[in-house]
Amino acid sequence: KTCLINRFCKDTFDKNYKATIGVDFEMERFEVLGVPFSLQLWDTAGQERFKCIASTYYRGAQAIVIVFDVNDVASLEHTRQWLADALKENDPANVILFLVGSKKDLSTPAQYSLMEKDALKVAQEMQAEFWAVSSLTGENVRDFFFRVAALTFESSVLAELERGSARRIGDTVHITSNESDLYQSAPRKKPKCCQ
Ligand SMILES: Nc1nc2c(ncn2[C@@H]2O[C@H](COP(=O)(O)OP(=O)(O)OP(=O)(O)O)[C@@H](O)[C@H]2O)c(=O)[nH]1
Image (cartoon, rainbow, N blue to C red; front, side, top):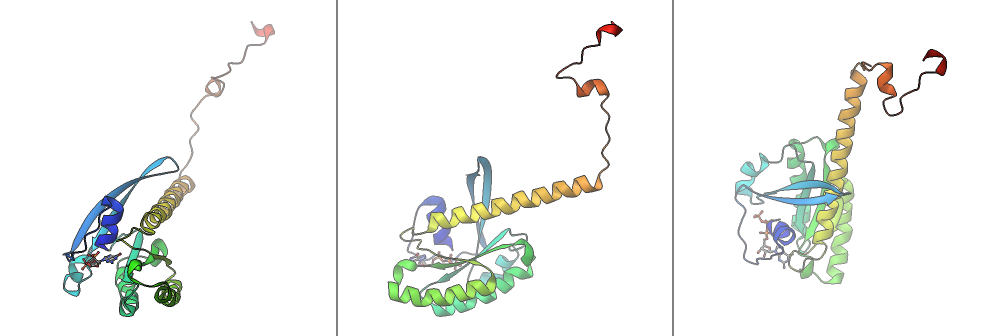
C-alpha cells in the first residue's frame, strides 16, 4: 500500500520494506471537470499487531482500497477479512470499493491470467472494481488513482445535490421582491396616456 501511494504521489519506489505503524497520510490535488478536488489517502498498517490502531481510521471513508499481492493466493483470500473489518466502520451503500492486485511485475503473463480469474470473482462478490498494478514499474498506478478521484468526485457531487434538494423540499420559499425588481433589466415604459 505504501509503495503504491509513493509511486503515485512522489513517483518513487523503495524496495526496502518499512512497515507502516498505525497509519500514514497523503493528500493529492486534482482538477475534475475544471473543479479543484483533493483526495486524502490514508495508508493503514497491514501487520496484525498494528491493525487495532489502523482500524480507527477506517470510519467515514468515501472509498476503500483493498490491496493484495497478485503472486500470493493467501493474500487474495485475506481481502475478504479486510473488507469485513473496513465495513464495520462504514455504510456499504455509501462507499466505493476497489480491489487492487499489486506487484504485477513479478508475475508471468500465464501466472497473472490464472490469478486474474480468481481476483475478478472476489471483486464481483465484493462489488468492487478490480485493478492490477505495479508500483515498481508504475503500470496502471496513475490510471487507478485517477479512477478513484473521478468516482469519489462524482459521489461528492451527488451527495451535495441530495443535500441541496432536501433543503429545497423542506423550505418555504418567500417571494419578497416587488414587481419593479422583476423588470430591473428592462424597465417598462409607462404608456403614453399616463404621462
Ligand atoms: N516487485 C515489486 N515489489 C513491490 C511492489 N510493491 C511493493 N513491493 C515491495 O513489497 C514490500 C512491501 O511493500 P509496502 O508497500 O511497504 O507494503 P504495505 O502494504 O504498505 O505494508 P504494511 O505497511 O506493512 O501494511 C516492499 O519491500 C516493497 O519494495 C511492486 O509493485 N513490485
